[in-house]
Image (cartoon, rainbow, N blue to C red; front, side, top):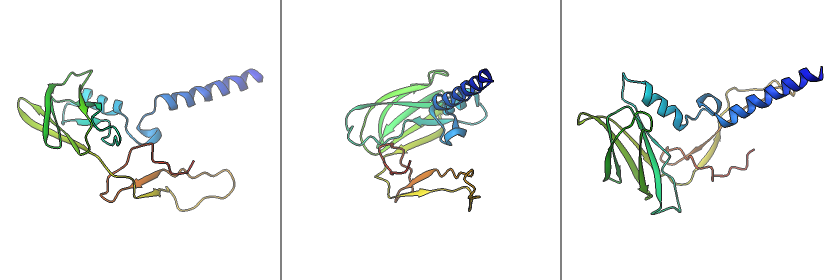
Length: 173
């Protein structure tokens, strides 16, 4: 009996660790970099282009930020506030990275095949969150002590942009 309990507990701990270390879009509903890399490696019937990470690095002005473009195109060109930063060939496995000195504004990637633009993707610097909204997936609870309501929070911006910084403390735990 004790052996069975221990094996169940070990299995539960293993599942929890896997979820913690190897999160995928379903567990937190936010696609990670690996999600976009896999798309770029496997999808061939439509253009894929995504920049990682976000472009909110207040206090890091002038410091180099490693930016990765996940794309299935041949080349990716990068611009910051409409100033060209360069163009590089995309490696199917390593993708393409740029070291970009941080400056607030718009970071844009343009993917091309044989000189023809096939995709554009941009990330922009946002301001601080304007409000925090809890999003419920149902209107009521059973109230029996066994029911739970996961309520993911969304920060809203005046310009309707998301704010990915973890430094935004809500006080909700």
